[in-house]
Image (cartoon, rainbow, N blue to C red):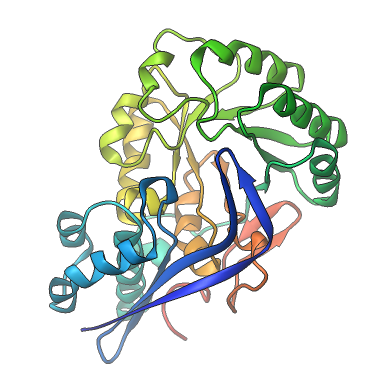
Length: 329
């Protein structure tokens, strides 16, 4: 087995702002596994708020190189490497390698029915409310929009109201990105109810989840930063209604499918999200999306250039052909 690892820096169309951060590029690693006959690829951006940057991912992959090149399988990888972007990139490469060897699509190996296009959210970075409303109108085909907040109560309220006024027709979610505290949550929720918002994602800091014990929200709450891996899913019960699974957080599609199973067992909704990357990183998440009630796979829309072949956005939906990631032609 030959393991090749590369780093890439992907320019964004424009700076992207969320609570506490502004991004101008998406820095990623790309893993390729080849055994002489079959090939597998994976891409990861890591998790910025965990310090999971490109240097960290590269070091983690190099530390595991010997075991990977010796022919590790996906469950062995899960035991060998910690959750995060490095394991996600290698896990994705192992999935595609297995598909290429077998000559069948990844979704078939995963035990999922043939995938179909799904409605995806399109995300608006935090900005001036009028500019965000204009951007919302610009997503003319969007059926679902997600709004990034910054934790500034007054401006966040203006943002939500302006976007709802601009797009009264769409499913609307907001992502607080840990910007609020429990004592300010009622005021935020009141604004969201007024604006007919459908989901509130990660209102509180990771580590403050216990503050949600006994809290009743008229709007479904989703855990993102609070729910990283399979080990966190149990703690979501009674605090969140939905868990947001991201492959860079949990360490790959292998664990993500296990998380979806656990969420279903607990009666929790499942959402799939993404860190900004190309279609190569969206493709494994699209497999998981077939089991999700909420899909947020708009990462390539932030990039100046995507890979070819790429996933397709049409009529507010995302679709991914097997040629993007799967057995080689």
